[in-house]
Length: 395
Image 1: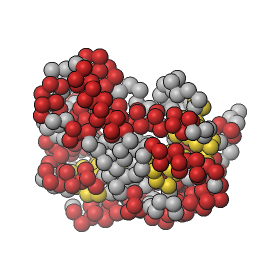
Image 2: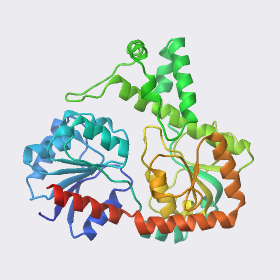
Image 3: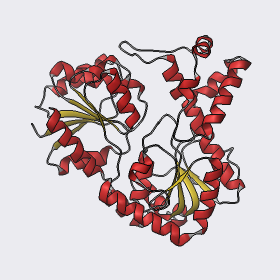
Image 4: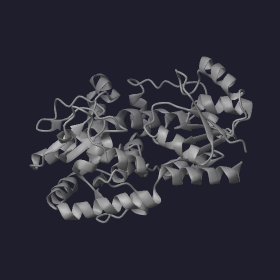
């Protein structure tokens, strides 16, 4: 196998850690970025990418997340295409290209792997996400940049992430009849306090979908087999539920008397009583905040059915204490109350945040164990070695 990888770079946070892990395994990585108008069909992109494909004897092309247009380009040139997902579901995977024999798709969500294997996708593998603890620990221990006060990173309780205030449900809602609005409000309210399971797509019955189709147009590209139920439950209802979970959870903590901070590029003007501290740079600043916050929160968007999001690994890898919602795969890797803390609903979130904020020594022991477990078992380097071992057998 040639030792050269063509790495298509986009906005994924963990791409540099992954690139460096490949390089440590002896691969020469060529990073390429081209503007992409569509994940599915982009003829200008494909023509330019094709010229890059024939320029070297690539071992494989690699991307974080899946791009149908890249899969098809690799198929035409007989080059293996390797993708590692960090979002779920990826609407771009619901495309006929997912059945290309040159694909080797690694997903961080086990339910996602099963779904596509059941469809007949040829090479689907489970590979959970991970952290680069060496980088995270160095960044966490480094002094703040000149002119930045250390207090920027110090909190009792904090959350860093999007509030999904630009979700498409808010734009659609005024057009919906009262019956549909009431129905969607009801199922979203139930989902908002339900963790570890997703009922949104199941709640979209044929009758509801038939009525919804009068107000919501499903736009599909050539080769796509996504449907109204999938798209609406994830890109519309899923994002709106994530907004509700995050805002209502943070406000409940504030109402319980806990000092809460948020780091986000979202509009936080309606989060009364919560300290807004702006956005933080992922590589250098977030690890400091994770290390110097007593209770770091993770809210997993309900579209991620069973997998563990990157934020959990980043918090633990930085040496921070993590209080996260329940996900089905969490108990396979972490133990509640030993190396992580898990909440199962809004009341449990408040109760556990108050408890751990008040018990410094217990919290610090759990954070240290979490950091050690990530360093020993959940590094990007370990995951990439597993990926390469799988490819060696499959190719």
